Length: 396
Image: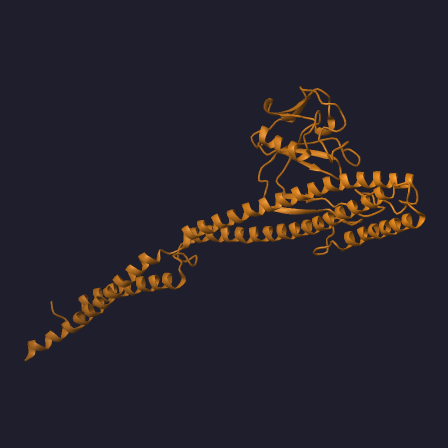
């Protein structure tokens, strides 16, 4: 039926053109933003996931900033410690030279003047080793914790904390076994839920770092170990959620070492921030740290006093160098964690891209197709709109 009141063909053509225009707007928006999910309107579920991961990326950035600050603080302390170690070498050189019995009074006085001048530089260096307000080598410095993950431990597990030892475990700066003799059978066996999951063989030359790494390696990562130099305590953590009270235990063959954790009761732990403690040191003269034996009372005014000074300096140098090695290990550990977090951030960013990024090659092809389709739709609407004019020919 021919009618001038209703043009069904034009209505269909208009609907088709509107749909094409809507699709074209969507494609143009994807091309301009590079995103197929730019707002929650595009895909609410995917947008929510992407926003959550963007938040985690921001958190990882903050964690890495904190690690960078901590690393810089440790590096400044290491630079100061290395300079102080060099000064100790020069001090020992002066002390050894002063042990000669044929020195004149003036020569001995000159050596002692050099000795005092070098010794006075130690505190100057230690006091200047500050980064971002933190000094790890000056008397009165403060410990601080470095956040090393954006997520908490995430699970309830168990941990063992060894008996606290005043100062530090005997000879801990050198070896984890202390001053006790070590037998061939000495080892620490870790038990979880009543099953032995790993054994660490304790040797006379095992360092603290060696022992901590061996715990993780022997247990396949199911138990992690840490050591606090300030309290002299080892802490062992099993992240696996468990129901019984003493499911994490340590048994040590040979000589009992309660300060390694043997016989201590496991306690429940809940989710907590993952941090690494950075311990302050005291590299000052007359201080309570590594250079406690290098006092202002040391003198070279006699052969006997020079010998005593040389012995005191040698002992201080040994302790200082071991503490510098520990600080260097901390710095490397933080660098390793930062590299991991950087790779993790890159992976998360790639995952977000997989969710929300538009395939621009495909969108370009769709754009061309929709532009042609829009032109054809406009032409079809024009033809449909001209249909009622045919009615006029009926009245000629």
